[in-house]
Image (cartoon, rainbow, N blue to C red; front, side, top):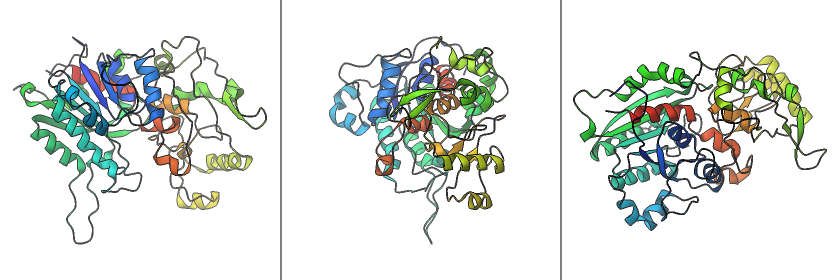
Length: 415
């Protein structure tokens, strides 16, 4: 495998479980050409289509037989099995991260969560299309054993089951944990990554891709003109303060409706910001709407900021004082990368203003550029939470594009 990051040709990929497009955006920036993507949520797919099929980040050569709309792998397998079979050997990479709520160490781990079965559909697509390479991203819990029932043996981590099935299909599979902060993302987000290579492409001198990635990490950051040290939260969102930008009307009634940050470009942007603002010109990014916090909520947030150590979740005594049962409330540390973003916007509070983050601030922390628009509702409540993917959820679930780009360049250069 080469240690060089330059690309020699365009490779073709399919993105399964694409969400709003963080991984696809990264792969496109690494020089890959998309064939199609599969995403079942209409809001997430509208963001994907707007940016990556029709917009400034477009790099898909979408087939005529497949409608450009939300769909599932199951639908695809049922309606287009002939067309999929015709792709055998013609696709270089299948990428994607099957939804992971049942594996998450942050939530209620559930071995029987039906969403865990989606990796079976991923494997089915791999079997039909037989790409040269595979890239699978998931939460850390994907590689952890489920707690056994009393008297029963611990179940194998799901990742090992998936790995064994892919090896049976003729792949050499490599796995590791990667932290996004190592690739210029202002977030300590650690994910389980699996890279598969068809065995006929694994020669005698083949190196473990993760070793090569460790060797080329510095080169990637230099190439992107990113800082070599971890990017601080304040370098990512410090130009989006209400106190320096002011607010303008967004929607609803003039008095009680939503306001948004009236973005003014900073005269001296951070290195990270120069990367994020590249090609945005003088345009303001979208999704700068603020949450409508009640006065009592603002008071509570002020108090949390006073008593909480930045970057560390509230402890039991603090939660008792605030009067909340919510487990994961953390005030961002301005001088460090963020904790892992979740799909719940009130898990993290701003480091200096008594409020939750805007969708755009979350997008910045995930390394989405400012000219990537996020579409759909902002939030969803109640029962719809498991059925819909509003803006905060789209961004919280995404693969950070910079990490996707680093992985895309790595796979491009597998020799």
